[in-house]
Length: 163
Image 1 (cartoon, rainbow, N blue to C red):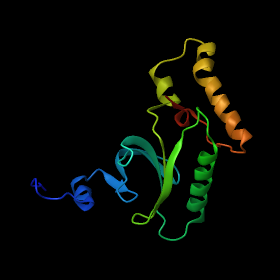
Image 2: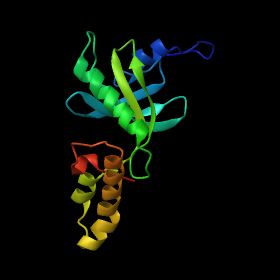
Image 3: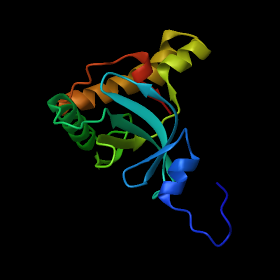
């Protein structure tokens, strides 16, 4: 499809032109690439077209019929992220439900690397350097979360984000 300079580009046109990309939340988020997938959700790097920034967009599996597991997981995660304001915990920007795709989503700050990637690239010189760079910030984040009665339940290198 080619547009002339006088034609208007619609969201539907964008959807048709971008086979590997898709829009979510009334066109606000442009998802592309391969997501990191888990049990009930996938995390995409997405462009927030309103704020003009990249975000991590967690998209829960579609629910056409009421699914109490997905709905409760979405509610709990949204509540926990909204309650936890700490420099070592990702910040939530937005959340909602896309009526067209039947998907709950959470938009959070985008962080490029995780501990798993960092460890595969190079080892730390010693325990003190690891603790200063990784250990202390993780412990501070977990202490803050636990003080607010939130437990992560899936702490592993791929879930520890590094900025």
